[in-house]
Image (tube, rainbow, N blue to C red):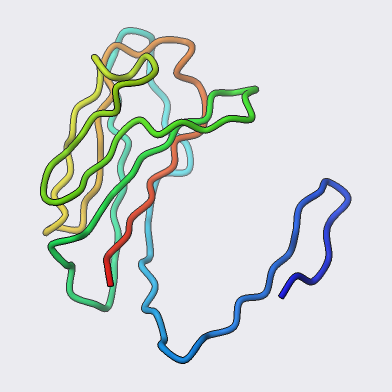
Length: 128
């Protein structure tokens, strides 16, 4: 149930467990990654779950450029296959470096450009 909003328009939400408890996935990334223009950088994403890692695990990376309000999906792993989303400037420069069986959802971005400054988010889902 909503508990009220902050001055910046943010909303604080309390989530109560339902009848069927959901085991959380803990996702770990580096807080900040630095690279030089033209070089490559690995964006690490590791995760842990008390549940078995299912065959239906999915990993999605999003990118939000500095100064932008919009986030775009740049990479998706599903059904055992990596898919580089056909949008933005990353499609020719991205490489899958993860291994879900090792609880790793990392990607590599090659040929860094100044416009790559921003926030990258790793989202992991382990159904059911």
